[in-house]
Length: 280
Ligand SMILES: [Zn+2]
Image (cartoon, rainbow, N blue to C red):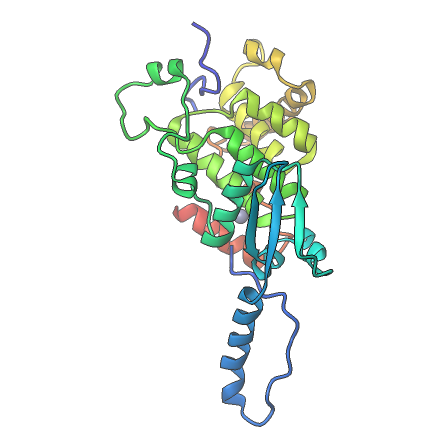
């Protein structure tokens, strides 16, 4: 039997954003009053105005607090400058947008079950279910990779950096929990949407190099079906891992998901995120 799609082959294995609000004049007379006043105006800035976003080509329109959008995305910040009453996102899948909104308001990524209140929003292929044993904890996937990749593509196209980082962390954790590798359809979607140079493509290539391609003399058949540039990228990572291994490093595990995050070089943010990812 060929290895199950996306299944691991062998076993050897945000800090609060600063408000982008304009500084308002604070009373000079009472320094003690200034701080609460500032906080209040930040709060008002975030929640005072809403924007309608028309998603897809159906009738669905969502109302969102524009301050939240502005805070997370330069793309939306620019779009909202003109005080347009409605934005249109015709190419965004509704489901992806709903997951994005849940992330935006919760401040963390919610699974489809949590965000969409769908009992069986995650469908597992029968053969995958069948060959996983009685480990009931790991039985039910919380995510399908395609949802995560769609969210990532949305984040990339609309400059929502923290969402992209959250997707990588979620994928990393979910795959570790379920003992999965990225699904091949999801690799294709990533490649079509973001190409070779995204942080998610780095993650996927490192994952396959670490768990899916131990032995270059026995390249699994499924690589034939994947984009050629993905395969060459994986080979490069394998070479790097081999060199690190020969220097005595443990390269049998992926390690901290923060490795693939984009923190814009902000040391403080990286440090906080790295630490919280270690602890999780
Ligand atoms: Zn990080």
